[in-house]
Image 1: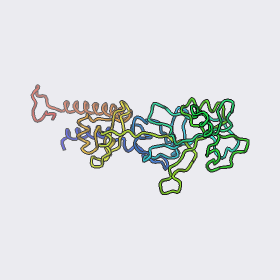
Image 2: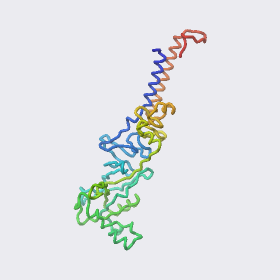
Image 3: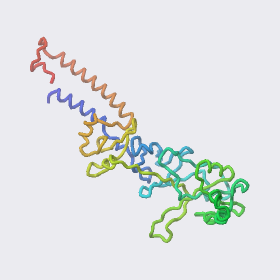
Image 4: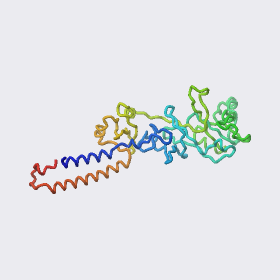
Length: 324
């Protein structure tokens, strides 16, 4: 085979190898928890709205990162979009009457996450001079305009603590209150010893009771779906994975061998038309630069070698000195 053809094959192979897909690095699970769109635990994977909020540790423990800390994720439900997390600083059944220092849980309001209305918060040993601790039905009947400000001492959950109905002694008071903002939660914890969150889990229509309480914080999320993402995921068009460019947060379809801006089927033409389009990480761009320099250096060396061996023809190109 002509040495010129071999050299061109080498350059093309080098470039194609450098723009290979990062989809193989988009892990689809952490421990026994599935990681699907819109989430990702690797750079460039999932939706940029949820970039870097999930962390998978070396021990395959999935955690949610928020302004108030990192919290273990118990499960992610994509059909009823929500994340269930636990807060190690909240009261649990093992604590009994021993109340540990706690801190308020908070979310970043700039991302597409929100505390679910299916959460109930129980507060323990609140100061009744600073917090309205009353049976809510009676209080709301007497003061309807202040109904939302009361901490309900007649709460069903206070009387039937999940998993440990008798964990608290008779001297411990309990009331239920839903803080509408992080600041409200901070104020409550200023006047209460501690708190916990109970989430009403959906058991399905086949069960005697449709819901059951369990400890945890339910966080609802949106699944941002665009036409490009749907086309990327379409099995008839290659079945790619929706991701994004880490440099400009633009859409990227992660395929088996390439990243493209449309969909995987016919991805080579897409790739060429987009100038060998998308790099989904900084190291890819760096690698391209390094390999480009190597390729250019090899090209210069090769042409010098050809030139040195070519016969002198005073500027006339013949079959013996033709480069291509």
